[in-house]
Length: 80
Image 1 (cartoon, rainbow, N blue to C red):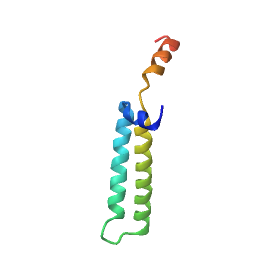
Image 2 (spheres, rainbow, N blue to C red):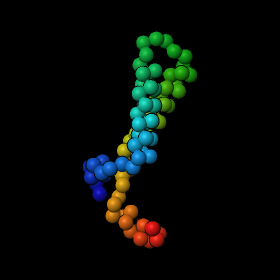
Image 3 (cartoon, rainbow, N blue to C red):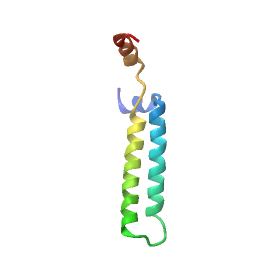
């Protein structure tokens, strides 16, 4: 499965929620960094980490997919 096929498959509900949280973190961090007022260095540093963490969480969550082929064999192996 290449990356394009992976991004076209459906994402599980938990990871959709995690993706949305990541988007919110990245947006909030970016807004704080781009604010036109002077802020303490600690606030800007935290906003930078928020932006990076949100971006990574969003990218990883979007790459997680429901794999129908493997889920059927896993259910058969686990007796479900």
